[in-house]
Every structure is written in structure tokens, then in C-alpha cells.
Amino acid sequence: MGDSDASSLSSVVVVRLLVLGGEGCGKTILTHQLRSLCRTGRLTPGNRIPAAPTVGQEIDEYSVPGMAHGGKVSVKEVGGSMMSVWWRFLKDFDALIYVVDRSNPWGLAKCTVELFRVLSSPSTQGIPILLLSNKNTMPSLIPKDAFESALNLEEVKRLPNVTFLEIDAYAGLRMTEVLEWVKKLR
Image (cartoon, rainbow, N blue to C red):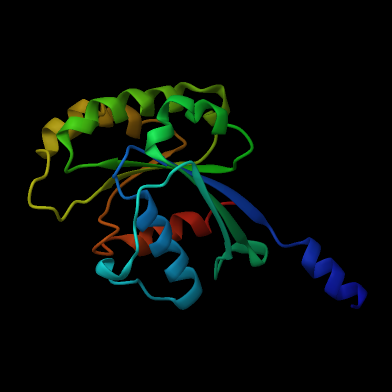
């Protein structure tokens, strides 16, 4: 390997991305869709994504086309069942995606409490955060005003490091916008 090859390898940026959210909110499908977009340029039909509850954590790393410095992303998805110990994961990461299931009124209060714990952690201050309202094509959605009120969304959106998107990872809705957010990470 020549000197130029060695220097190009050392300049590859790996962004450490932490993915949190309640049980069954769609984190696994989200991370699968991101990987599919990065590797093939296409989304995977939702019914072809093997999704089972994440027990513990899942870690994956892949190149992100169009990311600065030949960038890669290392994605750590932490299962919603581990919510009580998420604080252990709030270190050694460069960006955070927090997923909330808009079709689950029973889990909304718990996810909101945890969201505010995450947002108030010293570890997340100044870190880019993508807050995702997921499953927005489901027939049984929490009414928009009730959902936004429960999350105190107007206040959360005022935080300079938080970006909010309404998506549906299973249907592929706005997944390219999620990828564009990832591409901007450094």
C-alpha cells in the first residue's frame, strides 16, 4: 500500500450514531432502510424486512454515499426494553436519532419522559438529534395536536440541535430525508 493509500484510509470519517426509541416504535426497520439506501440506493419493501424486537443492542457500520471524507456511519440501535439503562449509552456518540411511534398511545407517555431525560442529559448538549415521529401512514394515529402536545413539540423544535421529521420507515415515507440528515453529520 502506498503512502497516498494510507493517508486516504486515515481520512475516512466514521460517525457514531445512536438510535433510541420505545419498544416496537420501528427502530430496526428504520436502521434497515438506512442501510439499504446507503448500500443499494433503494428502499426495501417493508414486508421484506425481518424485524424482531431488539434485545440489547445491534451495531452496524456502512459507507454513506455523498458523506464528507468518504464517510461511514456506525449505527448502534438500543432496544426499547432497555429504556431504564439508556443513560449508559449516552456517551461516545456523535449524533442521536430518537424514534416515537405515533400509532401507540399507550407508549407515548413513557417515550416522552425518556425523550426529556435524553434531551436534558449533559451528553446530548450540542449533539445533533433527529426526532422522528414514525408510523405516520397507520390508520390508528394519535391525533396530531394531542401527539404534539404530549411531546411538547413546539418547545423541543426550538432546541438548536434538534430536527423533527414525520416518517414511516416501513412504507419508506421520507427516508431519503433521514439519509440527507445523516449525510450532513461530521
